[in-house]
Amino acid sequence: MILLALVKGRGNMFFAPRKKRRNISKKSMVKPMLALTALLLLLFFSLSIMIPDLQVNDYFLLGFSKEDYSTLLVEGLPGLGGVVEFDSLLNRILHIVTSIDSASPASILGYELNFGGWVQAAVVPLALVPTEEEPGGEEDYYLPGQDSQLDEWISIPDNEFPPVQLNGEPMILVYTTHNAESYKPSAGVSKLDGKNGGVAKVSKTFYQAMESRYSIKTIYSDVLHDYPDWTKSYINSMKTVQQVLKKHPSIQLVLDIHRDAGMKTRADTMVKIGNKSCAKVMIVVGTEHARYKENLAFAEKVAAKADKMYPGLIKSIRLAKDRRYNQHLHPRSLLLEFGSDLNTQEDSNNSAVLMADVVAAVLKEK
Image (cartoon, rainbow, N blue to C red):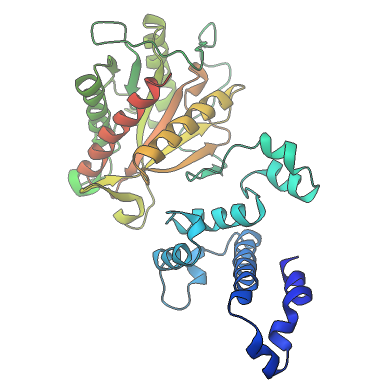
């Protein structure tokens, strides 16, 4: 449509005789040039969607980095604001030009069928934190019939976060299913079998920050769940969570702390916040239970708050199919991965303190 408008409405601008072209003002060139720029960007973005196996880096043939292109686009199109992440920037351009959120099927359907008014009202605002899906996760062996459930799904109203203090009932449970997971640059190895490794230190840092900075009573469990049989890690940690929830029904949030693996460099999961190096945090939600959307809704709330307070801290929200990660036990149960095994312990500890700030802000919202 944009190209058609260019040809019909402004085509004479490009194909008129030389004398006539001289009479065309520079001002009349602005709109068609912006439209042409938008068209090219949309074509570029559409190509990246139609060819999912083609990496974004493959497009940069002129020696420019993502950051270089992001800066150029923001300078050329001020309406984009201060977005600097290239992938989010392309999504934002599409949204500005067409009002379509490429991550929302409802938005695309509304645009194509001209239902924009009522469909857009139901669409969640464009988020800077991406949500991704994967076929499955690590060793979460889903064994129906071989575990005991809580009698009832815990019901917590969305707007009810009682101001629990250190002398009151605990509000948060933080534990580690894969206790051995560590950070190679600091521990020398990626796993410390039979011991509490680096992720346990992250859990403890988070727990200490919650209590010392915000006086929110937090339970920190250092029970080993992945030794001697790694395949029973989640079955073991599920028992720990069940015991704590039965004893303390006041728990508002359950966090299982992990770290990722398989990255090429430390930089893949690192972000600079202030003057500190921090490990990016990925939020993982398992979909293998009927009410996982309540876990996902809370994950999105945490991610949105983190994006406002510390942009770049949250790497993504990952939906893991055929996995549940004990999240069937509580509506606000999340798995957090702090960096990868290539990050340092300090990277992840720094992020743990920032995540304590984020969680406290979410819990104190009215």
